[in-house]
Length: 344
Length: 278
Image (cartoon, rainbow over all chains, first blue to last red; front, side, top):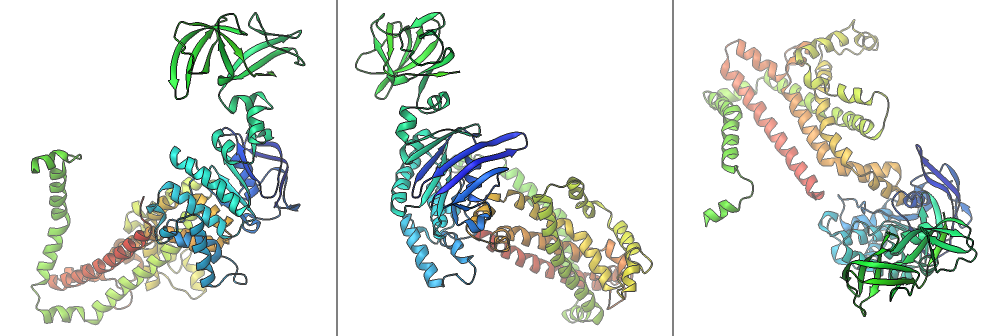
């Protein structure tokens, strides 16, 4: 099932939640919508599910207008951040719900429903919890039951809204891996919303980065990490050093100091220089594009994180390998191994 | 050992509050009720039975309990609809309607009785058109029914309202995306989630209607065997200085009410166990 979204606009009062969004999702993809809160990602997901309606634009499934149908007819599985399980029903009945409410003409008989629910509970590896009630389950178990419930109707599309947002870090990591292998197994076109970049990069085939109701970049996890298309994407994904610079006549300046950085093809004017923390290489003083004095050093696992005051007064944080020990008070040269400059 | 246990108790004041609770409940509720039972034992079982099986007593009890239950059922249905409208929709005047629900709580019941009687009397605003249809409300059992509905409605609304407010709208969206129709969502998801609160509201409205006196006696007509409620019969017996008769009827009302409320309570407990609290 392909999903196509064209020029989608959604306004809540004076707030533009979606400001002209175009997106094409290929069949069988596992797509992540990544962005900070308020970026419009959940609104986009809810419109695709039929839980919200756009003010303008089109949504089509396999070329067929989806906006002509309500949530009930769209046959979309939706998994909510807070599970939205029916707490007065057992786990079994929760999963069976979608099968039991089918119109009588297509409803399966009891034995088929039981077999199907059993199969789904096996799929999410929770068949032993069938008789429990949602309140007796852990967060991770509830979310897996919510997923089994959504899959019961054999959805054409699976939508997950911050599926792991309410879980603790360890369970989250387990479920990420599990979701990826589950998707591999069932291969339903799936979209999940997240504000956690690590989650998006680790789970999805393709990542859509959103900000302020617009799509900033669409690409593979490698694309958005290695070649961010905009300043926002560079700042949002990965840990970046951001410095305000001026580009004039092929020279990049930080304050009044020219930097030894190539400025080919850059538009003149105020710009932003982005460097990943670990791409800032430490050398002897005078060897790099920047000079600075180390203020603090903390060891963070495999790297040492140093706060460096640049000669112009700006303070940056870098991640350096631990083979050469840095000390507070050291004067060092810094050279970005890779960097990007965005106008504006 | 016990000193350690006492020190471990994190909430202080158990002894004091428990003592006060027991004393207070005894003084306010248990001792008067005990007196009531004691008084009724002055009657021999035969006398007791004779009073209860008299036609007038039986009819009064039937009118009280039967109409109270019917009124509570009507309140359950209408109250649920009112709660739905108040909680789920935003409309001008919502707060005013919300406040109006409490009026039967606050209004002196005699005032309510007089107002309802005036309204439903044969020449009243509502009584006249109804009389034209051949329906007589004031001074009939139907009048009692109306008064009982009036005083019971806030109990259902105020018990169900907070529960519906807490019900996550996402569960309705979940039901919808799983293919449930609006009706299926209401009957299979929303109502079962509200069941404990609905039962509580029903029990409270029923209990209130059984005990109602002030508003009912004005509109009832108080015809023995037809529109005479049990509390009124008690008052009549008291005014005739037949105290034992009065206490016998009171004891029966007490026991029946207690049994019904206890049963509803069990039912509610059962419904709640299916919806374990987090």
